[in-house]
Length: 579
Image (cartoon, rainbow, N blue to C red):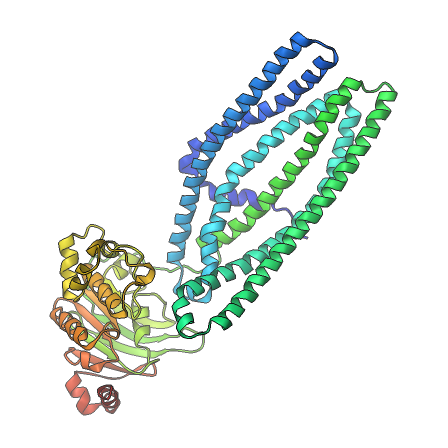
């Protein structure tokens, strides 16, 4: 049976503390206000008991004074509670933001293979709900401690009134606590399982949103609906079972509480008959009885919160500093790289034991245009993935300008390379903001110049708000060719001298393809350009063409020489001309 994990909670809270440290003045203010609320809460029942005594003894003038004190304390409690709530909301907001930013940063630092191996829901839920649970813990603890302080005062009052009744309450609280502890352990395991199911469903819903157009055109809604129905039903059943378990324990708790109340009344009758308790004091104890049971409920709720916190913290810190592998870079800083690449006996595979690249040896000169061609699965895009360290090679060595890429810092490597993928991602920002992501202080002239080079400026100017037009998530409002051209323009905006084009012209019509090809040709001599292409007609002017087959280089020369001397290239080119 799993322990409550108080020690785990303390360890996780120490880790979480750094995300609220910059707001510790707010935290201290919240603690101070919470203590005041707790003290007032402990005093109010004592004053209310005095109200009853004054009524019983018909001390009307004193009753008015006590009533004024009672109302004043209630009003003061409400005002201080409001201030505490306001401070806690600001504190929560800032802490939640800090945790989310850290989780997002850690997600970006993860190895690409970790992203590939997990559903998007794993990361979405941890970035949102779990981060919120961690930020909530500090103010929740002190909110509960408030109530505990209040009820400790009440227990002390019970002790001073009658020690036998005090012992009775302690025995009852111990019995109820035993049952609550059993409930907490069982609920924790169910909650842990539910979170795993829920994050899988979040990933599925994310796929539904991103793939809804394909679902429609493939007319596969029924199959997808069936799949999502089964997954959501599973989560709903688990949630129902958790709710049912909670209700059963609440029923048991109420039964024990009512039975204890009955025993409490019988005990008090016995004490009154034997002159061991005054009737007036019985009235006060009777008023306190519910508060005493609330004391236990508050402790149980606090333990529930700590359990939930432990689970969320475990999941979040798995990303920040836990089980998921993060990218590793060297410490060598190089401001500018020209782009002389050398691959020495490089082996790499996405799946263990299956190599895509096999003892690859290749040299690519700087300030020239190199094209890489071959059939699908030959390893062309993989070369780009390992150049940029999206994936780490299994063995061998890759150097740029003589520097081992394993030794370079992230900024030295990726800051010197622009990578235009087959399916470039366009952010749900304006056109201008999509460029300013790459270069924060880019001027409109710089943006317009690169857009003209990429043959996309005229299209942008035809949009309702021109460069201020929102492009939609993933560039949903753009055609494939338009997204590609914006990505090319975005790459040209950087200061990188190395530009990687992965099928950059594949989604373009013939006319635009020619314009882009000309734009790329215009960059020759100023940039190191490496192009992956299926349309061999677009790379005929490259300084060299690397021909790949089954993860190996089977030819390297100019287009003209390869047509003369390389049978495999001849076949590729002939097939391309038939399209």
